[in-house]
Length: 127
Image (tube, rainbow, N blue to C red; front, side, top):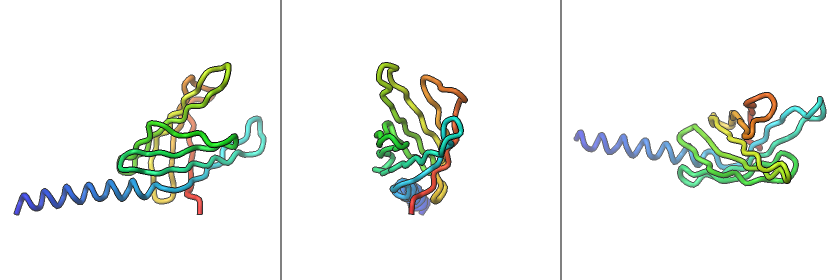
């Protein structure tokens, strides 16, 4: 009986992880302030989970860039976006955060570091 209970709990935990991973699939949008007081920019994030792996793209208005190293663990989400800046090299942005229903709250850190440090972004599932 005790073994059955342990097996049931393990299966329930595994099912929950798969459900959270599948729940992230879709498009999300977030607005960020424009540079120098300009018009806000709409960022579109498209995500697809395959188990604990996460793929997709981020479009900040200059065309989509694929995400890399994407992971989802329960409600926790992490991924990177690498941008080619031409003569200036590459910039890697690391996104970490949580999925809460239709809201995806992320913190972005950039290497090499930009002005202002980490940035908070609040994405909302697109309808």
